[in-house]
Length: 88
Image (cartoon, rainbow, N blue to C red; front, side, top):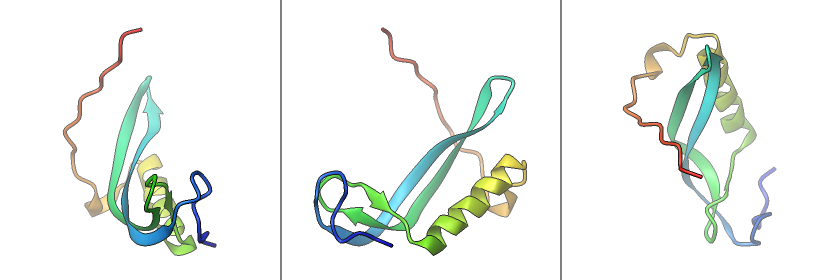
């Protein structure tokens, strides 16, 4: 169930989209970075917190399961990225 107000800041929730970036599937201390763009969501107008419908959550789970199994399918493509560690 989608809340009518944000749990974080009590802002208004509106239909929109969001991106999800996840670190997944460790292979010899290296991780795949998965970026799913423009996901239908309900987004807080103040802080940007995103809430997903049950259907969207199931779709994200299916995509992540494929990635974990090493079979992202035709939807996956290489993503240029750079990993940076901030100094202490």
